[in-house]
Structure formats: C-alpha cells, structure tokens
Length: 355
Image (cartoon, rainbow, N blue to C red; front, top):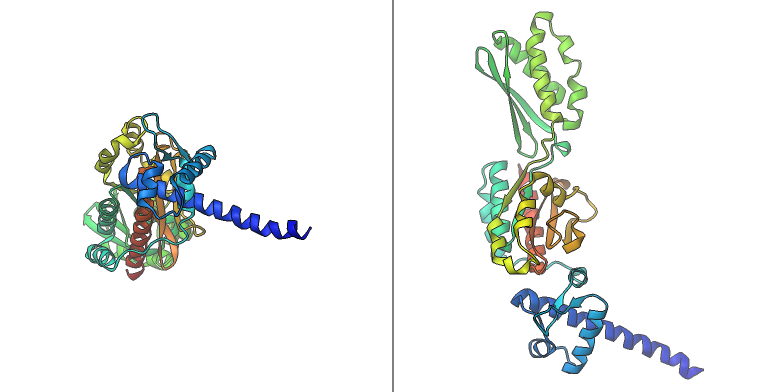
C-alpha cells in the first residue's frame, strides 16, 4: 500500500515532464517552421535545439503530437509542420509578450511623434506595422460612438453655403457642407454656433441628437430654415456609420508568402478589399483582452481561414476607441507580430491621450 501511495507522485511528475517535453518539441517545430518555411524532422530538432533526449525519443513525441492533431505531415516531406491547433498551443504558451528593444521603441517613437494630425497618425501607423512585421496591416479610425465633441465650427463659404466642422476629442474632424436657400446672416450664424457649443461641446456623440432635437424651436420662425438645415446635417453626421473607416497597408507583403497559402492568395486579397470584412476582422473593441490572436479556421470570414490575425485595441485616456492589427499566413512570426502590435497600439494610445 505504501509503495502504491508513494508511486502516484512519481507517476504524476513523469507525466508532467512528458507533457513539458512534448510542448518543448512543439515549440521547436513551430519556431523552425516559421524561420525556414520547411517541414521539420527529428534530426533537425536534435541538431538545432537542446532538448536533452535522443532522436528516437523526439520521433515518439512527434508521433504523439501528430496523433493529437498538433502537427501533420505534408505529402512532399518526411518532416512535420504545425497545424492550426499546434499554432494555437504555441501562442497560448506565450505567457508574456517579448518587449521590443530600445532601438525599436525609439524608432517607433520618432516615426509616430512627427505626425501632425489624426489622418497622419493613422497612415503612419499602418505603414509602420506593415514594415516591422512584413504582414498586411490594418488600422481602424477611432470610433465616434466612444468619442466626445470637442467643439463645433460654422464657417460661411459664400452667401448661400456654409461648412460645419465637428472636432472630436480623438483628433478626428468631420465636415459637412450646408446649402442655404436664403442668404446667410452672420449674426444668426454666430448665435447658432454659440447655442450649439453650449449644447454639445464636451458631450458624447451618442447624446448629441437628444441635446439638439428641440433647439430649432428656440429661434424665431424666419430663422428656422437655416437652423433646421444645420441641425439636419449635424444629426446625419453623428448617426451615420462613421466608425467604418479603416486604413490598409502592406498588401504587397502577401506576395512574399504565396507558397504558404494552401491554394492561392487571391481569396485573401479579395476579402481584404471589403471594408466590412476588415471591420469584422478587427472585431468589437473590448477591455477584457487587449491583445487577440486568431489562427486559421478560427477566422470565420470566407477567404481568410488560411490566415492568422493579431489585433489589439488602442485607447484614449484608458478608454478603448478602436483596434489595429496585422494579417498574414498561419506560419507568421507570432512572437514578433504580437510584440509589435502591442507596442504600436501603446504609442498610438499615448498620441491620442496627449492630444
């Protein structure tokens, strides 16, 4: 009885060591395949990695990993390559994202700090992500539904035309042109701007319709046509789906990975041309998981189930406002992609918070 009791901890330790070794073998296979894009054999693992066991033991571990669905044998090679499940296990074992080097952080800071406005920061961000990861980069503009109106301007352009400018706290600027049936009275325009400022400045976009719905009634009857025209344009601005603005960059990087896609990259390119698809990829901005990795068939979008997508939200003053990320083949460099996406998101957040 004592012998049986004593043997249980030994069996548990041995089983745990076996699992840890097989995990190390899987990590080595993923690392080698990402680096070489060639199927990995047991001899290569012994030569390149200090696993501390014989090639025969490695072959047994690889057989077990294949049986469990973590690796598979391509038709043209005796080696093994990771499956989507294997990549998922690899990513889940990355307990802490590797920080970028001081030189890399300095380069990002210097490149993004020269941005002059929101459009510039979005363009620079997508270029930077594509360059650093060698993947396709996608950046969503800050969501208006999570933004506040910083201020409003009414600018007369001529006797019958004016421009509405809504300046958002994220730095985003929305413009609308109003055609007026009667000549614009600049005194009335100044009065309307003052009342609108009181009503909506520093208020969430979602509250704007309620705050201005009765504003027209506070003006004299003869002034209401102009007031009504301005209010209608403001309401259309704040209720339109203006969140759906996405910047894409680095699509040419996919050509480097043409052989890494099961069939062809054409379905991937076609999917990336659709703004709706890009927004679905970025997903809902949430606070629970800042960094997200979706691998292969975890992506439900047709044409993209042979890709992996690494995304992160970015924030203004700790409040998530949108997402950014990279898209590439399933054998992407996950460690580099995850650390780069996370770092760039932090820099964009800092830019918005300093605005």
